[in-house]
Amino acid sequence: MCSALCVCCIVVGGFVGDRLLTREGLIEYSQLPALAGLHVQFAQLLLQAAAHTQHLLTSQQTQLTCSLDHHSSKQSTVSS
Image (cartoon, rainbow, N blue to C red; front, side, top):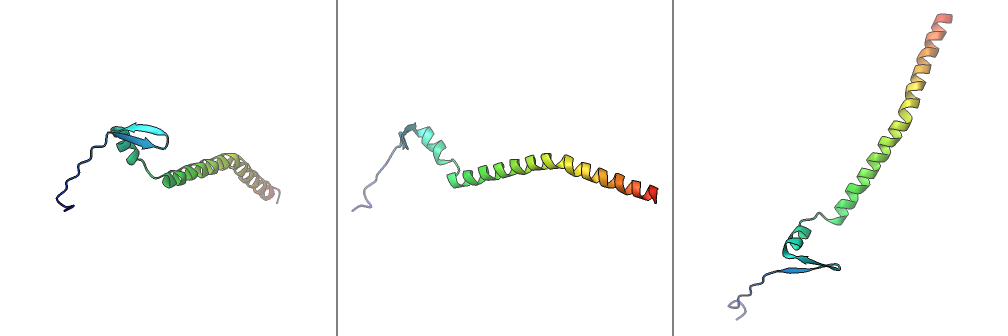
């Protein structure tokens, strides 16, 4: 009896949270990535930025240390 019943549904809009969306808005919302995936991407972005900042802050010190070591070894071979 239920199989003979044809139900047709047309979505014209709906609520997501406290917002009323049109049909197009609901379609766009349904195609958004999962929130957990966005959290992971955001955390990776923050870690990448922090690593780049650390590299920028330490690269000059590393270069100076290498230059001083090279100069020191050059001076010790000249004085020997």
